[in-house]
Length: 205
Image 1 (cartoon, helix red, strand yellow):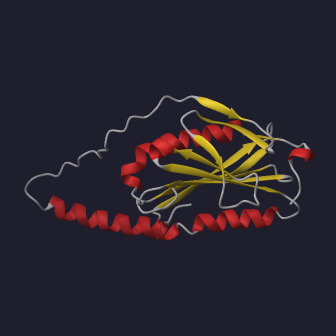
Image 2 (cartoon, helix red, strand yellow):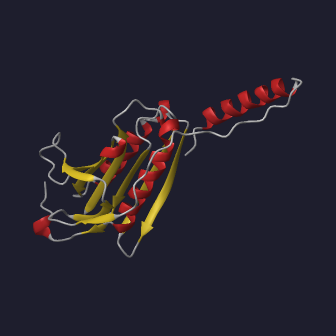
Image 3 (spheres, one colour):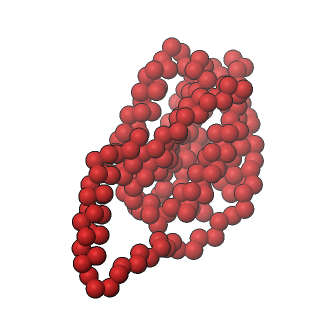
């Protein structure tokens, strides 16, 4: 999904700017965007597999902890990327005829970022072999609080939602190399996610 009005305004301003620049004596040469040098660790992954109703692989430089702000949700966890001051929040729900509600909630939480976003791009996840379906959202814009979100489900039993946040003031332009680096880890998590269907490990709420 693109935020069309923002794109149209950007193109309009760009045309006006080019017109002004071409009226100058010296041609304008755009400079490539520069980033501060950030040392990124080597990609290594660990299997997260316990009594939870799902398993996945996560990076060795991340730390998993329970969501202390939601003590009644024992399958909610946080994946902390401490070197980058970032956290991926994972919330899990057992589906009991309320899948539509969870889908609508996930959509609403994404659209809350529209005022600060330049564009939101969604990508469909379909893996029939693992019974994993969902959407990922890349939220672009220097002021967007969460640059990446997703939800995954098997459509009958499991629903998992993830959202990435940084413990810093939103400035996604300077954070872009880190965002892209962590996004690779999230995509690896999604690609390795497996559901568990043991009722003992997946009690109803």
